[in-house]
Length: 280
Image 1 (cartoon, rainbow, N blue to C red):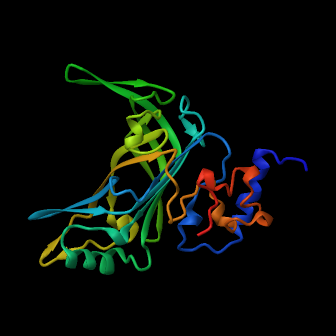
Image 2: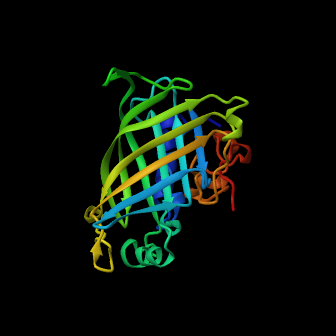
Image 3: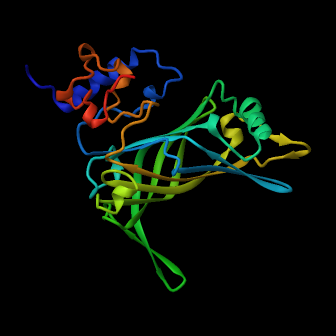
C-alpha cells in the first residue's frame, strides 16, 4: 500500500476528528497528529504547581489546582522559534482548585467558575515568537536571541496561544516563559523518566474577558485580575494520563480503531509502549 505523505495524513486525521462530537472531552483538545520530533508529557503529578492568585482589600487568595495534564511536541530542540515548531497543550482541572477553605472553594466553583459546565481551562500554543537567554551585567538584564534549547540551560520564550476558559476562547501572548531542557541522566530519572522539559511562567487573566463575574466574599469583592503561575515538569517517559493527553491524539477518531486511521502502530499511533492510543 502506498504510504501517505505527512501533510495528507494530517488532513485526513483532522477531517475525521471534525466529524465526531467531542464537547467536554479533553481528547478533543489535543493537537494535530505528528510523527516527528519528541513528545513530553505531564500527567496530574502532585509535584506540578499551578496557582491562581487574586487580591481583595484585606487579603490575598491563592488557589492551587491539584491536577494538571500537559503534552508538548518539539520537532527539533535546536530550533523552536516559529509556528508548528512546538505544539503544546496544557489542561488544568478547575474542580480540584483548593484555596484552603472548603466553603469558599465550593462557592467559587458553583457560582463563578461554573465548573459543572466548564470543568477545565485549556491553553494551546500557536507560535513561539521569540527565544532568548537572560544574563545579568551588574543590575542590567541582557537578552541574547537563540534558536533553540540547550541541555541544562534555561531559555525564555515569548509565545502566542489560545486560552479556553469558561466557554470563551481568547488569543493571548505569554512572555518570559522559562523552559529548561534536560537530557535523561541518573539524576533526572529521580524527577521524571526520560528527557525532561521544565516549564515555568505566569500571566494575568482578566475575569471579565471570560464572562466570569468578580467573586465576592462577605463584603469584599476580589480583583478582576487574576495571576496564573505555573511550574510544570514534563518527561518523555511519562505515560499520558487518564484525561486523554495522548502523544498522537488518536482518541479523537475512536481509540484503537484501525479502520478510522487510528490505533495503527505503523503510523505511530495505538502503540502502548509509546503511551499512545491506549483505550480506557
